Length: 236
Image (cartoon, rainbow, N blue to C red; front, top):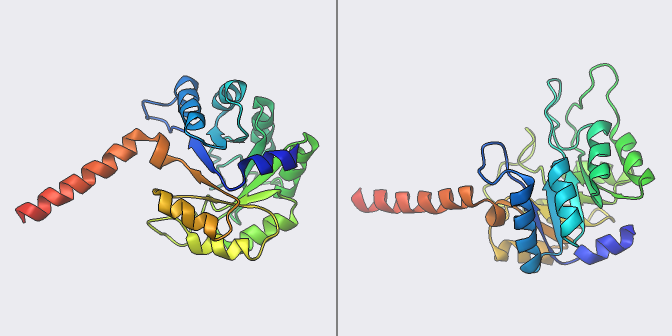
């Protein structure tokens, strides 16, 4: 099952259908519509967050689904499927691939934090694939040794020690694809088809695009900011 899921997304576009609190499009009915539109447009997979969204999309969109749950814990900055509780919720919702934060940051659980390897084992016992969301090359290499099936550059720029770039971290994609044997998923701040093409040329197995496709709030802000800057330049 795992091999077929990976083959289905190879060299393709995975669309991240997520909406944060406060976004008018938050809710499974809206994310389902986004996922259906992405499928019609040729996406090979969907990335979704939250039990309801995952379950709703998986039931009605026949594409491989990367699932995660974002949850904040007071003793840790890790928030993408951080504990066994969230891993099991993602699995119960029907995701094919479970995305897990595999960064070097302190994990939840002051007394006895669960190891990342334990979370990977839970996923594998359920017959599903585990995806490591990382921010550096070293984290990707460790993820491979822990048994992850694929690794994503999702968290580059979102840990204190990773580079803060305006666009995607293409150097990280190149570094990991030449160092790891498991598939590398390029993700994080991809705005243009040209950037997606670059990532694939560098060896990415697939590319995840979210905001640039599924967040009209921020897409609108992006256009408005350019118009505002143009006005200021003309008036200045």
